Length: 143
Image 1 (cartoon, one colour):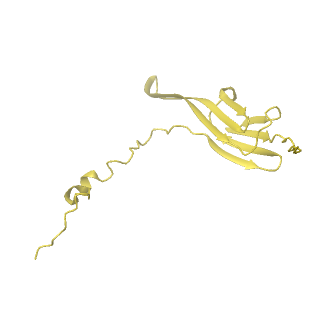
Image 2 (cartoon, one colour; image 1 turned 135 degrees about the vertical axis):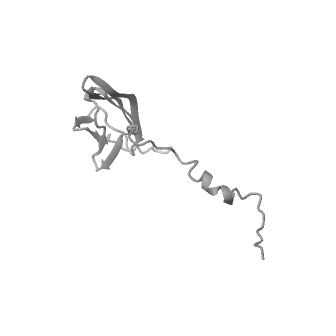
Image 3 (cartoon, one colour; image 1 turned 60 degrees about the horizontal axis):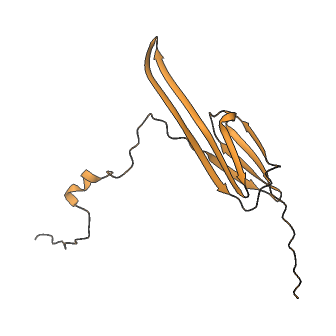
């Protein structure tokens, strides 16, 4: 006896062709190529300030820029990587990567940008961002 199967026009699986298209829409990843650099952040908070640790390895201190606007903080860095493989006097492979990475985030309180501090060592940028002391709420008298 033959197996009877109901036809569904909205079913997009084609059983004989499933193996052909398996993984077709997955992103292609080439081995040996470096991935685009990203800034990884750790943010901690206490009652007085925020502390931000941003991993930006292989970047010079002069190529890092931090801007503070109220409670919005932006970190950007210009990345320059060069790699050259030689065998004797003959260059076998030469690779270059130039680009800009950028991270922006919003904090719960405004930042006192005059008292903010930044320190960069061993590929880690450490930001100390003191919270701005809020103005006391003013009570209005109703007339």
